[in-house]
Image (cartoon, rainbow, N blue to C red; front, side, top):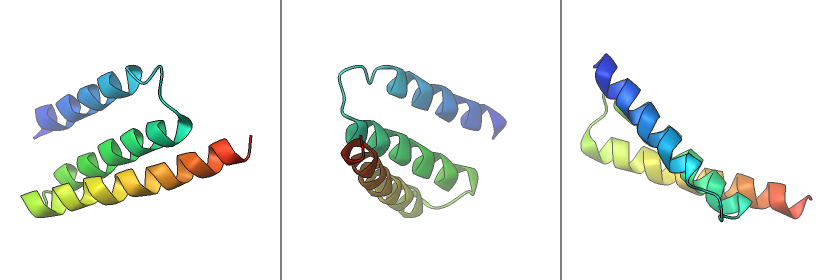
Length: 72
């Protein structure tokens, strides 16, 4: 189980490292989706729960990133 957690974190870091030409809202969505999915996996949720957590995290991240970019 620990290997799975480490692998998920490495994949998330790799995806976020490739966000050079993305807007702040898009970066927030990617980070939120990765965090939501990782939390769903770490808690041992079912497939549906993990996907749902990723979708909710992505939506929350997009909203947060959009708010940050609008305040600049």
